[in-house]
Image (spheres, rainbow, N blue to C red):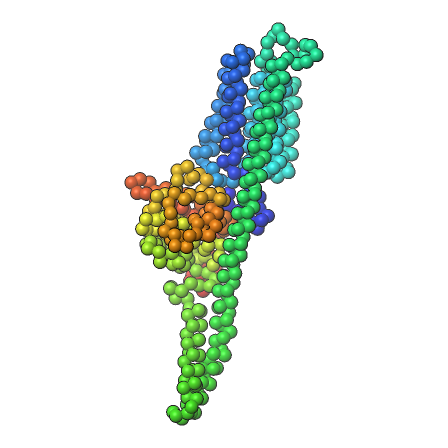
Length: 453
């Protein structure tokens, strides 16, 4: 889910992970199937088993469709999560209608989707789901198929309920406690990890913004110091002409002139916009990718930058978060590459796409759906770049935040990221970053400024 540019990270709703809801639904599907089988064949009660299994199978099909369509690390919007939880309430209501309505002890599981919403979604969503659960509970209380039970044994006969029914109530409560408790722990753990990871992201972004501010200060200093340095140079030349060659201060005056010229040359380099220099405020895509790639070319890995399109090259405002995010992806590719990393850019009138491909072992198959989640690390291979310093995968602490930070910062600029392995017979990993061109290209907004300044 791309992050809106209109909201700071700390004030943005991040939603439930799709993987969390899929796992919880698989747990529910397993419990429902087991309950139907036990009641029908082990306890000998009559259940409309075809209809019940069809309702459970529909949930299984939905889970498979969600898994195939979206990566598990994707965070759902508030609306998407609400619809999925509403489906879970409807599915439970259908099963209860088929198996006795509110007389079924497992009616207590109506609480689970509402609790999930209360811990992770907006108050409005929780209210709507609560009203849906309450309304459906009332309906299955009024209209339902008979509870699977022995016709000769009435539930209300005697001072106590039948032992088997009491055991069913206890089982329902145990399942509800385990299910709701495990969910509450999982969501709380995800929230804690996400909060810590976002705090680390903000620290990194603050550092990059500070460095960007220093770039602006350097440009301002170059402009302001130009005039006084020119004056110093002129005065030094006048003094040198007025001194005799054997004057004791002649060497000092000559040195003063040389150093002032050196300062002026440094300022010219700071303010130049040649292709080999990095602009301070905006740059073409090729300049930006060279800026990202250059720090990673001294580690024995070939880092090549290519563009598939030459005409109408986008111009991008210098953005510390965007540069750092791309740099982190390139660094990760260099760390795992066998010998080569390719950074390719392509653009159309609608999109700008940057692809980073390496020739390393690729993403682990079991982690590829979760890439971009915080604290996710893969240490299947020692990184030779880190061996001399003893650092972990993501710096000294090895927290597994590298790709999470990159993903967060790039999504903040409006990008969508996709992770995949290179098709056989080649091997390696590929990260594709796609922006709507209107979000990043400032060339159309600056009439007459085709080149970055």
